[in-house]
Image (cartoon, rainbow, N blue to C red):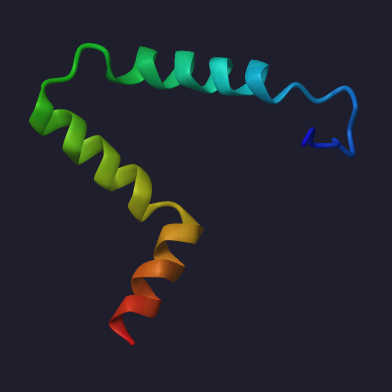
Length: 58
């Protein structure tokens, strides 16, 4: 089944590649500890993950 886009000029794969390129540029020189800290900071600043954590706490 082919997905129909509401915005025909939107290219999902292009957006994905651009995001991955930006993320890689940010983290390419980080060691594992720095990467984990970066991910945790990023997720703590994201409204979606904050809602999930609040829901888990009940």
